[in-house]
Image (cartoon, rainbow over all chains, first blue to last red; front, side, top):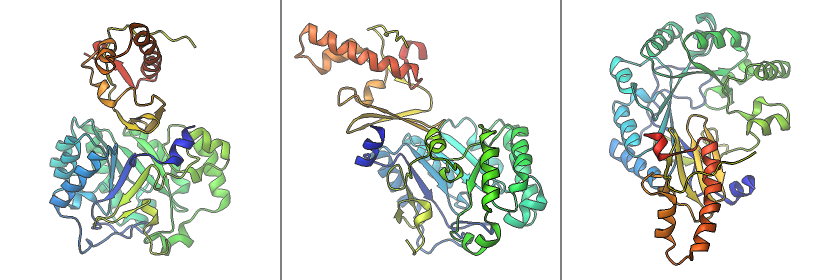
Amino acid sequence: MKQQWIHEGLSAPVNVTWEVTNQCNLSCIHCLSGSGRAKENELTFDQCLGLIDQLAEHKVFQVNFGGGEPFLRRDFLSILDACHQKGLVTCISTNGTLLEDDVLEFFKGRRMLYLQVSLDGGTATTNDPIRGSGTFNRIIRNIDRLSGRGIPFSINMVLTKLNFPEISSLYSLAKDFGAKLRISRFRPAGRGKNSWGSLRLEKQDLKAFSQWLSGHQDVVTGDSFFSLEDEERKGLGLNLCGAAKFTCCIDPEGGVYPCAFLQDSFF
Amino acid sequence: MSINYCSHSHSYRLAHGISVRTEKFGLLFYNSRGPKLTFVRSGPRIPPNFFSGEMDLEKWIRTQFPALSEEERLRMEERLLQTLSKLVEKELIVEAAMDS
């Protein structure tokens, strides 16, 4: 019955991914949006407020902010605040390098805010070739500050051939900071198209990962591709693609797509 | 599983982290802590603003459906109480008195 209701169409997306800027201070080799410089016609603050009004009017439950690096927008805290005032739950995906004191102060006590900090290895040796030189230490310093102030967050890792051997150490590292580990699939989009051949996991690695995941039920993954069996996907509630059913994606210029991974001109 | 019906006098509000909206089939609950969706086939009877905790069920039915006979009203109340009790069990809503 639930499936039938979904196929008949909901009145609005459950959550919306909003790539609020294309600017990024890092240049990760697997970046699915190929972020770097701001796009020419990124939404102004007033346009962002108008969009938030529309999302709230349609009773969207949650906005997942990504980019680019959202905190490169000087008005990002005001955008978050406007969402909270309209009753929209927010989740921010950040590279974790720009979490200044004013940002941490803003986070404190916000019950409608979830934070995901990206980290791609349990050591600098593994993380830095993916995310950039010196990033491991900067990110660790900032998640230590988050943890010290009691601000909840999760650590988000994109699974690649480079960091696959370190999933257990990253899992332990997350636990040490009181955070959950979230693992996402590497996709051949953005700069990921160029590194696809060298970073994608082999079949046997995916099998081994699937087994590891079964033994670590507290690891978060919204990715159905990690479950090799249909029944396992059903058990996790991942047997349905949410694109244009539960979710959609808004790009920095206000364009709307079925999901973040379908922005490529190929689609 | 046995269901303990809630007292008529209770009003209800959403639990922490829960949002709700109307869909064609009834109500769609969203738990941001999951995140997780719960689909409830309640028809048009319970609107999201019922979960503001401001009006108890009996009073709400009398206000919304003034033409119902006493027997019809009691039947409706019993049916809605079953649904509400399940929602309480799932920790999507709380009895307003308990939430204070």
